Image 1 (tube, one colour):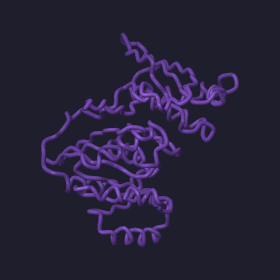
Image 2 (tube, helix red, strand yellow; image 1 turned 180 degrees about the vertical axis):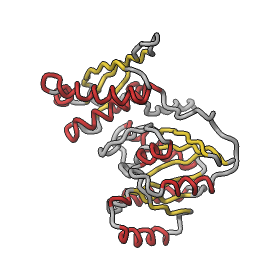
Image 3 (tube, rainbow, N blue to C red; image 1 turned 90 degrees about the horizontal axis):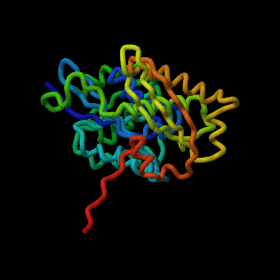
Image 4 (cartoon, rainbow, N blue to C red; image 1 turned 45 degrees about the vertical axis):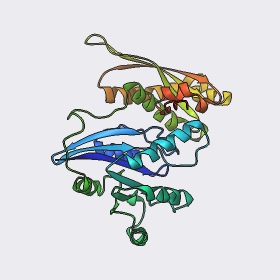
Length: 302
């Protein structure tokens, strides 16, 4: 049997979350075309006849401007020395830039196999891939180079077989029915945030968050899962956008989110949404903790 950890790292919007969802066979990470959608390290477990793989989706590595972003980048970089295989996910539909070189430089510290995962091949013409693969191969940094499409599933089976080939032998790290380490409250909040990003588009940037204030399990055979959420924005001008004329926008967000929640939790859901303005919330440790962004433990006094 094989078992071990595989971290998916890379720039924002490279498709890491879509790939995680594809690999574990269910939606654990929300997906959006907005940058910095993933804010926490998300663990997902998949069992194969040959062994167990623990996949880690990580926030996109970028230049941090707030306390939240610093912790997001730290969550990604910290996995470099904690896993058995690193998967660098690169969006081949976008030209490489300084940010890509920064990530490549980070990988110099890696002591485990590094796979280059050239994602979104469904968006480019095949002849364009050959010089790209050759260029990366000349760097002599990668154990494997695998072109794939997380969206369509193209070549993902080859990735899985290659991962199992390189993983060390070992017993399963988690029970067979274990899926993720994400708390239900965090998963619910993220599903609401996904719909917030979907319906508000460019009007509401990534300076918004969703906090679950109450999460009441169903009671009885016909009981409802009751979830009460607060959507946090950092400007007064954003609140009427989220609410919409006559409450139409927040109703759309709530309806779509409730459908996602019911499909995931397998039960009927009552979802209550409110909007709150809090300037500089991305510097607030309590809110960061509530949305699952890791808050470092205090250092011991010298």
